[in-house]
Length: 166
Ligand code: FES
Image (cartoon, rainbow, N blue to C red; front, top):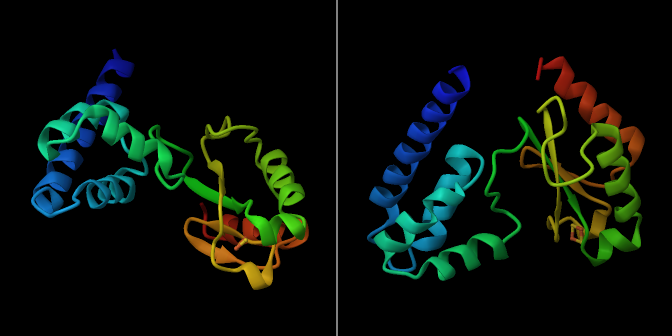
């Protein structure tokens, strides 16, 4: 029963966010991306169940909406952990240890794949350039970028998060 109530609440929150996104951006030309960004910012993901409603409202096919949603790594279609760690896998970072950094972060946070770790605290996502190529390797935590990242520096970032009680 509790599970049903929780999912009803999540569905209600998602529906309200979709309505608000369409109200704010739906009338604009090329509205799909602003709508998706709105939902990603508001919910932390774009609910897959919203694809038919978005397609109808924006006069697009479901395939078009789904194609854009899955093309951009920025958009998630499932809820993630409370903190989002994005590790750069683009060329400059790769050349300077980005892959080892990603492996370290995944292991350290217990997030081997795209899903949140068991404690729901973190989600680890590969990204393709954070604009810090001259100071690779780079990652971002909850949108805040960190350059010249090492396992030791990452520990300090985690310690700062812990100090804020998050
Ligand atoms: S290649 Fe990693 S920040 Fe640009």
